[in-house]
Image (cartoon, rainbow, N blue to C red; front, side, top):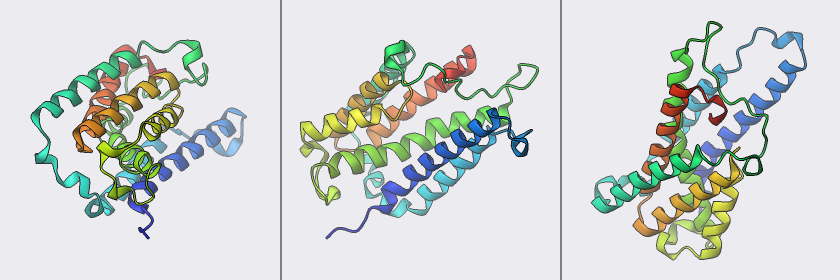
Length: 228
């Protein structure tokens, strides 16, 4: 029997727990609870991403798939780059009402009272989204979950052996993890295809990082905070 994959699951679930904490405290603050008056809940993102990064570092030796960075073929790096850019372009153009879980999301706004960007908030958000989140999510959704749907001992299953059912199911659930669920499904399909095609987890990680990095830069330039 395979050992429970704490290394692939815990960072992702810690991230989800913090999302719940942020939403809960935000609701309480909006309701006017005095003990939350004056709290800047945006700083919770820095705590969240730092703790997730710490867990990823703690389990780094168990991510055997990530030890083959140099073994990735050049064409697969190109696919990762192109897919990352394509998903970014689709993401910012698929914000239709029906394609969103909620139309009331304000996103992450790192500006100060005078409207200037507070880089103490913006930079950790950008780096977390581009570096930490892709690693955390690809380890969970592609490396673990997509393969686990086919085989309990997921590490014994090669990416190319993933069934169409598992590929579609993982992409669908991944999509609904996001506010822009339709764009999220397309992203999940793209990253899953890259993983199955290349057999290397670094390829969807890099594609995911390109998407999130470009999105963050675009958001900071345009002020479309709802995309964050």
